[in-house]
Length: 74
Image 1 (cartoon, helix red, strand yellow):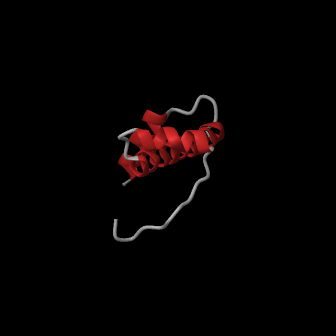
Image 2: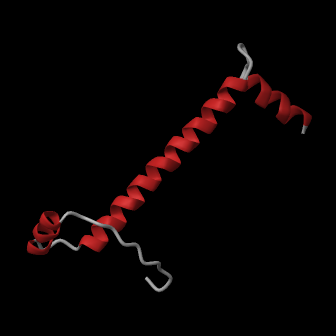
């Protein structure tokens, strides 16, 4: 990780004690959790954008016909 930033979090003392007793690589676990959360946020944003696009499509719009028409005019 040559191009990285330092992020600090605060946890209760009891939690920190439990963390020290374990063999878990907490830095890696937290990086993974952040990546998963961001991926979920990306999916939510993409779904929202897709819903906006779908709402703009007129009822009865025939996608297949539109594709065929576009191919014939090209």
